[in-house]
Length: 267
Image 1: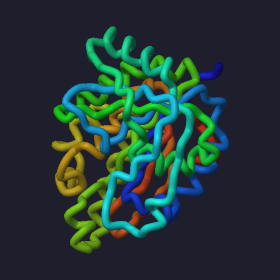
Image 2: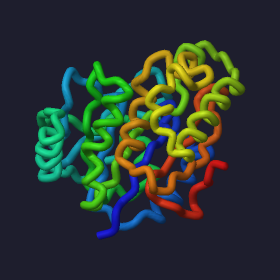
Image 3: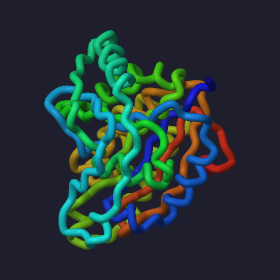
Image 4: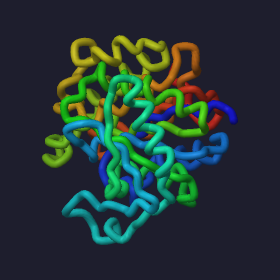
């Protein structure tokens, strides 16, 4: 089985499920170009726990973990098979890496998982499980988590960090539209990724322009470091064009370990 890439995907607002924009079709093309997958593992900021948890559910249900959106959004579902055996293996793998985790036999898929997967793998025929985001995790911990999960790529597992490249909800809800700063931050991240400058990605708070404004809190940035941490320094890294939604949410995403014409390389 060929080595599977890792992926960071920006899911932005739940409305992405109804408004594919630029990223939706690009994810569809990417999904069609991927090698055969045995499973998909997603880390999303919408499942935060005190310690690491791994979902172990045979048939994970769709969680509509948001409020105040149009009714059609609540009628959508994405219900792939689960990956119970793999979940146990992930717990053992994390323990060996000094990152103890426990199984969760109830958790379905939050919108950070099912919204982008509806575009990436619309047939919902690939087993899916989630790993939670510990509430006290920092950037170095997220990178270490990605490294601990990396061996799964050799088992056909697509590791997906789902977040948002920029995520200032105050400005989003206040209808503040200032795409210039968000684009500057997104471009800085793209350069660091394609130059394999993972140290700068970890220390982005001190090095990136507008870092605190782009991410007043870090939970939507940390999945990027999980995806990057699961890759190696000699692998290709490509940007998936996502555009800017609502004038403040960059939807750019990144694939690690796959060089394909269906992704747009960042200069």
